Structure formats: structure tokens, C-alpha cells
Length: 298
Image 1: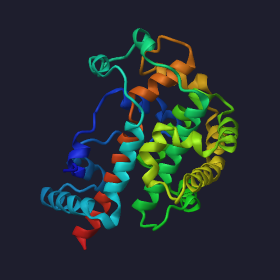
Image 2 (image 1 turned 135 degrees about the horizontal axis):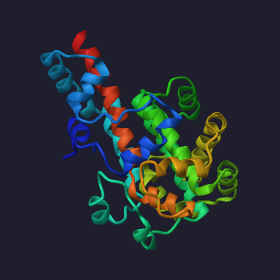
Image 3 (image 1 turned 180 degrees about the vertical axis):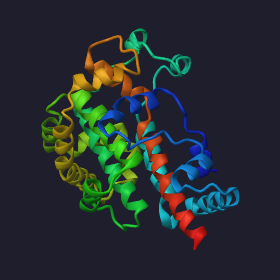
């Protein structure tokens, strides 16, 4: 049986590599993200409620709403989980022993390999596709709509949702692909054919979620989504002045980086974090809690 939203939020870690990485880049959007864990704690923080009986009613109502398929909460969480689990985690036992302390990964670099540019490029655009699809599910938009998503991204994306998009730009774009990552990705997609897409393990995991009757149609949707988001990404890069080096330096404040090869840094972060799932659960929790509060107080 699928976990309830209560269980998902209660199981979010207070401190692991994912949390350290998100804290490291939080300076780009100060005040936007806090690592809300624990469902009752989340209710208190999001709604401001202090009455134990009201909190219990919101909790109970949230559980019902989460499992109601017409709201798309479970589907959104499944998307966030799928995009992360498609990337193979490494060194699980070794990393588990390092939770709660700074991490030197020099000793495990031999276990990872940076992704080729084509694979990395498609990982990023597939994450954008997932974000568009999940956004539409959470907001009752019947068909995935890149323009509706970009309008929200420009005007009212906040909290964990905004943090997720900033992390996407930093960790899946700038750090592994360099300052010209947008042009590299654009060129990769423009030259891609359906064979490249069908051979991508992340696409294989997500194919059923992506609109389109054929692989060519699905590639068209993915391309449309990336094209729609490029303006926002450009603005973020210009506004923050981020570079691969600045991101690496920020990470170094939380994780002991024992190598200056940014390809390997990016590969380590990619293969040892699940920031999409972590912030995705927080995004869904916020939305279902607020809906539950409205329902309870009506």
C-alpha cells in the first residue's frame, strides 16, 4: 500500500546529504525554504494553528484528500519519486555512516563517473517535464501546459517548489555542464532523435507520464517545456551571478569537497541526493495541508 502523506513527511530526514546540499544553495533564494519535517510540525508551521484538536482535524482531512485521485497529490509524489529513483544511488552504506557530519568523498570517487553531456542534458529537461506535469496535476489543469507552468514560475512559485527549480539550475545545469549549459542543452535536444530518448533510463521510467502518443510526440513536449523555461533560467543566472565555481564553493561550506573536478562533484551530488523527491513531498504537503485547513474551517 502506498504511504500516506503523513508518513512521507514524517520520514523526511532532518539532516542528510540532500539537506546539506539544499542548505548550501539556499543563499540564492534566502528565506524561501526551510526543511519542514514531521507532519504535525508542518501543519503548525504552514497554518499557524496551535489548537491540538484543529491540528488533528487538518491531519485527518489531509490524509483523505491526499488519497483522492481527483486532486493529483499522489500522482505528483510518484513523479517526484520516479525522477529521483531513476538515478542510481551510490555508496549507500558508506554514505549512511557519514550522515550528520561533513563528507569527504575522495575515497568514493572511483565509484562514480560523470554523465555524458547528452545524458545530463536529458536528465535536466526530463526534470522540467516532470515539474510541469506535477504542477498541472496539483493545480487541477487537465492537460500538462508549459505556458501555465511558466506563468506560475515567474509570478508565484515559492517555498520548496522554488527551491527545487533553483537546485535544478545549479545541480543539473550549471555545475555539470558549465556556464553555457543552456546552449549545450538546446543543441543536444535539437540534434536528438527518438532513439536517444528511448535509450535514456530516466525517460524509460517516466514515459507513461509524458503526454504524447508516440516517442516523437513526447520529445516534442519535452522540448516545448524546456523552451518555455529558458527565459526564467536565464533571468535566475543573471540575477544571482552563479557559476560552477560559486556553486562548488557554497557546497564546500556544508560538505568537505576533496576534489576540484566539478564533473565529479556534480556526479557525486547527482548520485547521492534526492532533492526532487524531498522538496516535492514538501510541496505536496503544503498544498494538501492548506486545502485541508480550508475544508476544516468552512
